[in-house]
Length: 169
Image 1 (tube, one colour):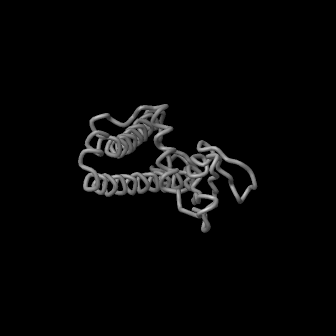
Image 2: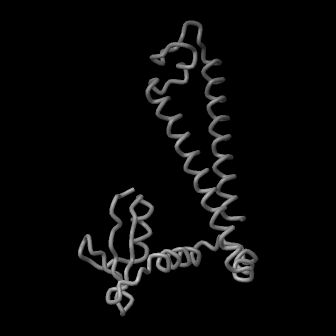
Image 3: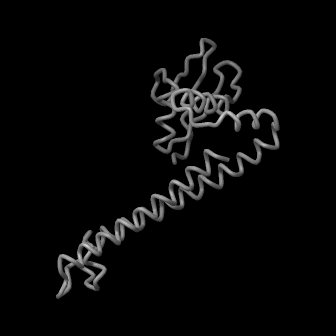
């Protein structure tokens, strides 16, 4: 992530101005910046009040209008139980996001390892260059491919479990 957050000024006419690029910006563009790993800070133009949290919540709500992922019962409970439920949700969300990031890092490590081995399933047979060992056959390659598919499915299930944990909390 960037060291310095991108400064966004919010004017009384509700327009958002990106100071780093000297142009107006939309909520969708702010969301894209965040997805790229950038930090943003939103300030009210005249009072310098920090509106970052409110703006990010607005982005989430706008995206929810399009996708409708949050269960209504969860939203009712969030309002009903107020601060205590919000704190619980924030802790759980932080935990789930950390688990997702860890899983993504592990998947990246796995793929980098395969790339370094020459991206050949035969590299598991003992040859560090990825060349097929003597006696390898089409059947053994098919077996190795099936094993890789199974590993990929396990990884996908882990990611799905983490995603379900963040939306069903």
